[in-house]
Every structure is written in structure tokens, then in C-alpha cells.
Image (tube, rainbow, N blue to C red; front, side):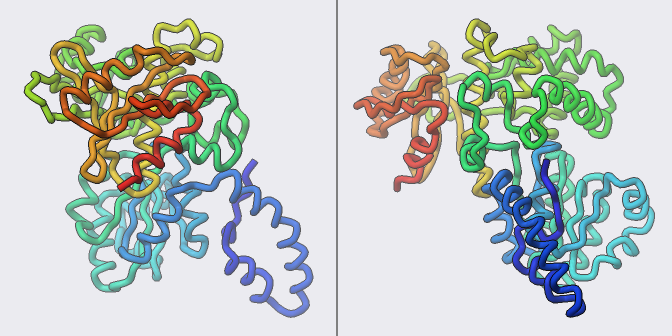
Length: 436
């Protein structure tokens, strides 16, 4: 269990506890700090987030920093531990929500010196008042905002705080973070089912039970707040149909027909899942090399644990024989690439390439004027088939760029055609992306 103190990870906070009291209490305070110190250290080690460095850096450059991401991804813990001296207010609390809605000026007046405001999308009109304050104060790091709904939030943030806020996204744990915190699962299939949500690791919860509650509590609530979906049972079926198509080309008409809804409704509901950070759409890369290309995006889930639950896969052994094994693994790797860039405050420059004849590269990374091809294979044994599409694409594009094959095995191989990277050593791939 995590123990959260306002002075977590803050030397200044500990110094304050020790010396900002009467002399007679210094010894007692010292004993208190020595008692909780192991918990502070544990909290820092277990839940170190790579985005924290960027968050603190941007707070010194912008008056407002806005952190978005899916519910339960750790946004509140991140911002509170990064700014332990700032006042914290959550708009999920009914009293604070009512105060902010009915008297926004009075609500913000009590926050002299700024504050952390959680779930800002609940009262979007606050943003206009915050704009006035930051323009008057002319201070960096005044407000730290968080929100769990991407499209709804950014539609409001962009006009009100344009040029005044930095935007960051915090996703569930990446493999990098799991490895750093020494909580990565040893077996691939166990990792896929566990997913990346911090609470599963914090409380050592059963993943299937937690994801069941997560979907019911958060996703359905977001559906009601973003779109007026009358039939939640049909939406639940739609969500599972999306899961069965993770890693595939998006076909809205086919998806709608399978759920008994029309094309426009399917498009609308898909936007809800995007806004709630449940899915993302991977766009095709349009360098055509004189070939007719597929122009539809591909649909991916952002967390393999959520995906496995929706596919009713609760036992790691089931993945071995599941027809969805390849899709789950591809989803997992693509989400890791998205997290890698997001944790550094960047939008992921990831695409896919596919022509009308069926040749496809699972992922193209456009980085530093380079096009880096990546193939994703769930098998544990490397075969020549893993390199076929890479060979085709390189010949067609006349590229000299060495690609990567990410696979479900455990051996690193430096082949002439591509570097072969196991699922749990993606840092090799990330190191290759940094080469100028």
C-alpha cells in the first residue's frame, strides 16, 4: 500500500516538519520523519514516473501545465508528489464542484499562489477565469490542471489558455517504468493480462476483477458525461466489438452493422473511447512510392490489460492458443511506443504502411528525417517470414535505414536486415530511435 504525505519526495517538506515548530518538538518530529522515511523511499521507488521530469521542467516555463490521461493512470499522485506545497482541489468532490460552478471567482480567489485542480473538465468555464489570473500574475507554474477526458478537455483548454499552458499526457505504466520500479512481470502473457494500471500493482489486485470494475465505473460514466448514450448494453457490446478489431483497419460501417447501430453512431461512440483514452487510431503513412495505399486508420487499445479483459482472456495460458494472440501483442507494442514519446512530452510520430496488394509494415516511425520500419511478431521463434515485408518496403522505398523486429521471444539478435528485439528489451529499439 502506498502512503501519501504532502512532503513525499520533498527535502523541503521534511525540513519544514523538522524545524518549523517549537524547539521542544524537534526530537518528536525527527522520530516521525525517521519512522516514515522507509515509506517515502518505497513510494518513490515503486512509483517513479518518467513524465515527472518533464512536468517539473515545463512548470518553470509556463503559467499552467495541463496533464491529461485515462482515469486511474496516476495523474493525481504524479502532480501531488511533484508539487507537494501546492494546494490541491478535486472537482470530483461534490462541495468543491458546486462551489466552482456557482462562484468561479470566489473559488479561485482562495487559491492565491496557484493550485492543483483535478478533473478540470468538470467545470470548463473555470479556464477563462484562470486565463485572467495568469495574465495578471505573470508567474510560471501557477496552476497544474488534470483531466481524464481528452477531446472534451482540449477543446476547452486550447481557446482559453492558448500559449499559456503546456499539455502532457500520462498513460498507465510503460514497460520502462515497470522495469525501473522492478515490478515487471517475468512472462509476456502474464504482463499482457496485468496491463499497466498502477492500482493493480499497488494493491496486488486480480487484474480481471479490477478491469471489470474499471470498465463499469469509469468508461460507462464517461459515456454518460460526453455523449448521451441511452443504451449502455449496446455500447458495452460495441466496446467488445472494438476489442476484437484491435490492430485491424477501422471499418465503421462493418462495426456498426455488427452492433446494430448506424455509421454515424459508431463514429460518435468511437470518439468517446478516444476521449477517454481507451483506444487510439493509428494513421497510415502516405509516402506512396508509386503504389496505391490503404487510407483507413487502424484501431488500437491503449492498454493490453483492458483489451484482454474485453476479449474475456483472464488466464495467461489462454493467450497461447487464442486467435487474438497476434492482435494483443501488436496492441501491446504499439501502446509502448505511444507511451515512450508521451513520457517525454512528445506526440508519438508513429504510423503504419500498407498497400492495396497486402504488403504492410506494422509501424513506421518518422524521426529526425528518418523513416524507421518496425515489424511486430507475437511468436517466440524467429523465422524468415518476419523479414519479408521489411525487405519489400526497403526495396520499394530505396531505404538504407535498418529496421526492427519486435517479437515475443527473449533473444536479442543483430541481423543484417533488422535488429531483432524481445518484448522486454524495448530499450534497444528506443536507443536506435535517438541516433541522429
